[in-house]
Length: 324
Image (tube, rainbow, N blue to C red; front, side, top):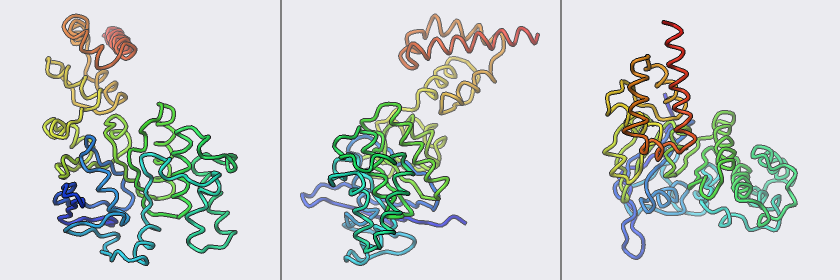
């Protein structure tokens, strides 16, 4: 049976100026989950995250960590923050020491560990995020992706069981996004660390998360697996998000008579199209693509993706002819 690590019950939060940020949030996250909390800017994702390790206290309702509610005294907060580490959206808010090694060592040193244990934790954490060799580098001389990795290392050095990351791929180029997400996936799989991210990058979320919570205007409006969420256009519209491009393409084809199931990733869509094609449907689809929806598909896929689709369709048609 799955073990609940974070639970909220009717949790609400109102800022001191009277702004209602969270309203009646009920969620449960289990050990080992890869969770994404999605929603547009201002939906309440960051505010929700700040409750997960006691930075904010609910105005009403409650939050439980590993089945226990907690008082907001120094002892309880220290205990919670050793279990739940938060990586902020902007790593500059988290990196302040003169060197990388000092920054990563800051948390463990405050646990009154021996120097040997601190050094071991720092070394292990930097190795996990691929930053070994940059220990003496000043954080402000690092790239955006490197700063993110150092911030993650600082949390890893605390030996958390849960890592919460607010918009972990914001400001990164595609290579940096891939590096960060690979690190998070490996931490989940190899170290059994539960990962919780917030994002409005639906392409990344479909490839990473196994559980998704949708937040809009401070309310939790839906939860489920990627297929549950992104096959519900009403929820996506309500949350001011868009469905993944691969799913948008398949919806477009399906709405125009092409028999296919909706898939969320490019690779899944590729195989779904190949599976569904025969010679006649290929010619129908090619006609549809080139004539009626040429411009729409160019907009959805980009020029390179559009021509790749045509190439795939042509290959499928040739294969079908060879079989016949």
